[in-house]
Image (cartoon, rainbow, N blue to C red; front, side, top):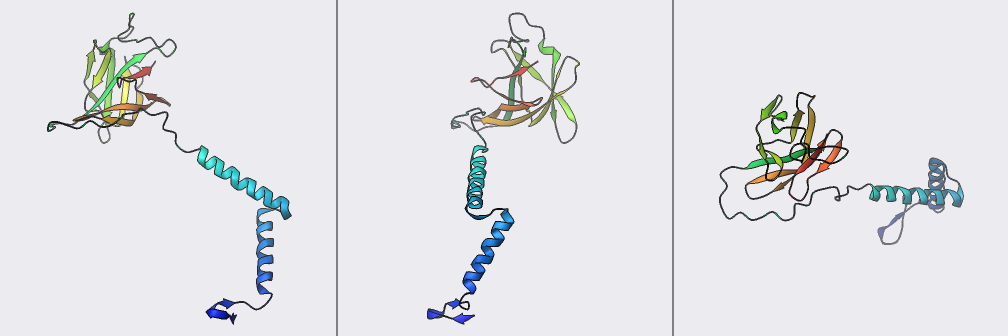
Length: 190
């Protein structure tokens, strides 16, 4: 190494060119590219990777829009987690609990929440005015049982908060995402 002007260190004459040529050859061999064609392939690969990176970002369009959280005008004594749902026919969309020709009764439905390890059943409340089953004190992991059929597992993905509680609005149920309607009611397909 030689000391150049202003204290800069430079290599012996000709080594920079040789190092550059060796680095270029290694890069080409490493990438299996030769000449300008190789550089074009490399640039196309980088552009393709960049496109995939940005196109695979999480989309928020499949999510309930909670809007702004309201301000509380009073002190909360308890904080509840709600789950409002009904069960509909997967083909017709007909409400099987509160529709014109119901095939299920609210008593046919059981909801279980997971507390640490075992599931425990919680109470459901039928609201025939709003045509919904309501559960209070729900968790992120639940199981639904219709009549005496096998349990259907539910994972809550998103809640909307209000003054003294939150309501489940996006769930993962039996392999698909279900999003609540504008009234925060989730329609589970059967």
